[in-house]
Image (cartoon, rainbow, N blue to C red; front, side, top):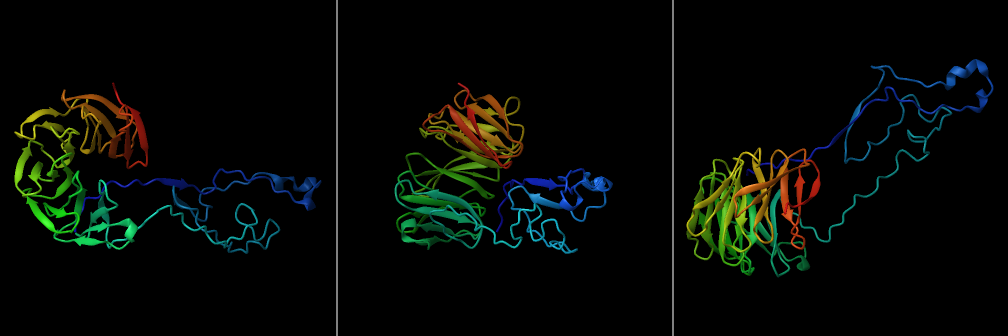
Length: 355
């Protein structure tokens, strides 16, 4: 199974050997008042090459376990049996248990790439690298209530229809499968793209699915019949994100070619194309709509966030704070002037939207 790897955040902190550091003066009551031994209280420095070992720690990792000094740590008079900091704690003390705040956890055989909640019922669907979709009712336990087979490659996207009656799975096998969410029966198979499907979105009111593919196209199907309703062509790179505006009257897609396109879903015509100056400088990874559908917030591979007017077909603002790829964006439903972005640099940034 294949699945493109999202950029992973990797924070490293170099721990240099104690060159140039100054430990506190050692106080020995036996040496008090002895002027001949004053040099014993002076700071000691390590010369380059005298360090025994250099350890590079992950920023999120706990410190490595302390080791007993080969020369017999604890045999000298300076805090024998204590840790490196002289705290007196046993070096072999058991580590604290790993924190787990999850209210419910289910395990699957392979990586999970997509997850979705039912809009009204207590149900979750997920899909991933083992090519099988799974549905759970968390109140019923951690065992799946049904498994959804039929894909021949990794599942990259899942989602429920707005009324919750249907759910869809899509994958790298270039197909989307539609299921009855109550029974798990397959209702239709949506085909057309020549390469893997990157994402799918349901129409906000009807049984219509929109999906973007690696072959530079986006497709719209009738989920009840499986009939293709529209194909959107014009991008010169994988169609990485997109969706219907909240009123369902417009389609917006963005691509690895660094562009955003606005489409009429009834005719398939491209009403606007945004690219170049004032917009993204690299592949676009993610897209979110404002609640009124007037603007989009997009993030790219180079860490740039852009706000774009859908109706005007023009960029409104570029926003910079990330140092790595932006992988998710969102707009606050209760406060539409606030948006957020999350990146592979480990940051979540909250922004004021331009008026």
